[in-house]
Image (cartoon, rainbow, N blue to C red; front, side):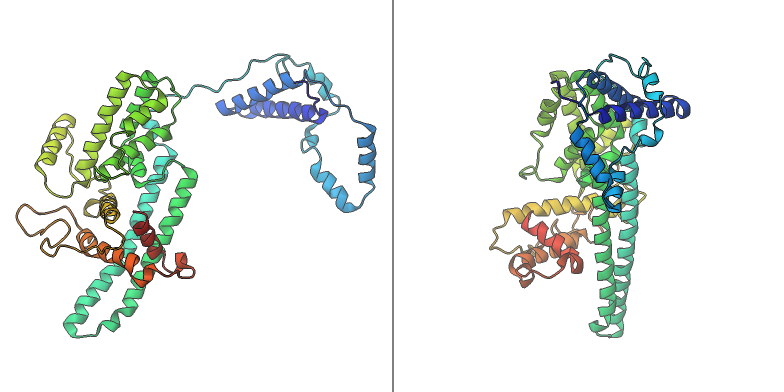
Length: 434
């Protein structure tokens, strides 16, 4: 379309190209790939716009400029603000001379194309910004959980000591308030960290995607190679592979009957999105099953013959022991027997219980089972549950659910509840939308 171009636009574009080219050539040896691509785009725009008709400066605009110069100091400041910001770099007589420079301002230039994305490597994944930010997030979370655990450890010690000495429970109010403040502070801090992490990395929206970023760099590189070899859409982003593997891992956290479980569709959806052929689809299905097995071995709740055989088989193939709860082994407050992803799985399993219970019914524990997973003192019933997870499932979650559904706390709206009781806000959301 032959649109008239403002001459100031052409002048500014030329000045931008000239200034950027000079600085890049003299200081940065031509600039990096991104800077070179930006210059190619600017030069291409110049070759197109130079052929368009140039708008004339009418007398009306000249009269307007003269009138504006006659106005007060405020208007003069405004005109200065709207002036050409590159005018300081403009040199008299230089424009006509450099316009004929065919290297800097060619008459024709091909449409620039973005450089093809390089294959994802394990080294790149291990040193990536998102993985470093995930590690920092988890280390901070470990410190916060250690702070909270220390407060409640003091509370438990005082409870035991007061019972032994016959001190009334009212003496524990101060310790209970300290522990509550610590828990609220930790919860608000984690929420802030989550928002900052999502602002930097939009794909890190679930705990499993964080774990996939941390635990599965080799498998991420393998998926990228499969899509490049067998898919029609080869320009896949690393973040999309991590999201896919994290969602694969998520399938192990849900019951098979859970409506949120994408076990039957996650691979086919990914294959359709990137138009992967049948060979690549079969390889992706194998990777999906492998991720499920790795996750099951990590979050196993109790000894199981099938799981133990799988553990031994994978140990023979890889030469590496596959013990459970080993992903965050160096983070003592959120790893090992206190694995936070294990607690996440328990919460998601219990969400299925809430979803299947009618709103007018109450959740009650079977007293004969002595716990959600049976009596841990019976032979063959020892579980992997530690650090209050058993009491969380068997006592706390049922009571909290009944409180949110049938108690007074679930029927009132507290002012500034996100500041005063952030835990209850999260709990109410969990019960209302399991």
